[in-house]
Length: 233
Image (tube, rainbow, N blue to C red; front, top):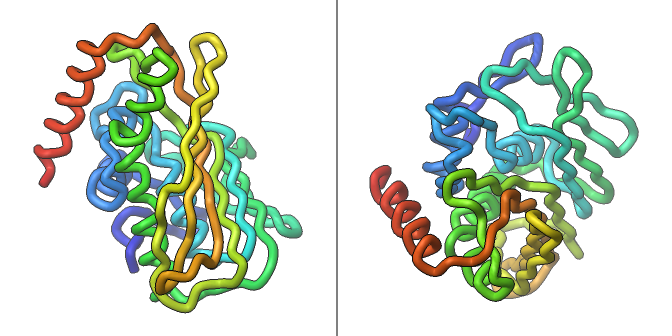
C-alpha cells in the first residue's frame, strides 16, 4: 500500500512522525516546502498526506470537498470521526484539523485510488516555482524569503463519473487574490481518463507574510528551492 510506510496506525488511532511526513512530502509529493523539513522549527504534516490517508481509508466519491482547520504536528495521535457525509480528523482533545465532505457513488479500488493520489499530490511539487512565481510576479508581491509560509486552505474533487483506470491531471487555470500581506491562490485542473474529461478539481492555498516583489530575491529563492530538490534525487 502506498501510504503504509508514511503512517503509524494502532487501535487508538494514527499519527505521522517527522521522518514519515518529510519523506512523503519529498518523495511522493515532490513538495520541498521548508515547513515539512524533518528539522523544521515550525513543522507540520503535509495536507496532501492527510487527504491521501482519507482517500485510501474511505475511497473516492463523486464529490469530495476537504477543508483544513489547523496544522498537524509530528506524532499527534489522531482519530477519524464520521457524521452523515462528513469525516473529520481530530486529536484526543477533540480539535479538528481537517473535514472531508463526500457524496455520491464510491470507488474503493486501490489500483485506481493510489495512482490518482500520486498524480494529485505531485501538483504540490509544481506549486513553487512553476505556478506561484508567475502569479506573484504578476501581482508584484512575494512570500518573505526569511519566513516563507504557504499552506492549504481547501481541496476538492468532482467527478462526472468515477474512474476505472488511471486518472490524468492537467492545470486549467490559476489565480491569486492579494489582501494586504495575505494572498489566496486558486489552482484549477481537469481530471481525465484515457483522454476523456471525467471531472475537475481545485486546490486553494494561503500565502502569508507577503512583501513587495523583488526579482533578485525571488530568483535566489527559486535557486535555493531547486538546490534542495536536487539533493534528494
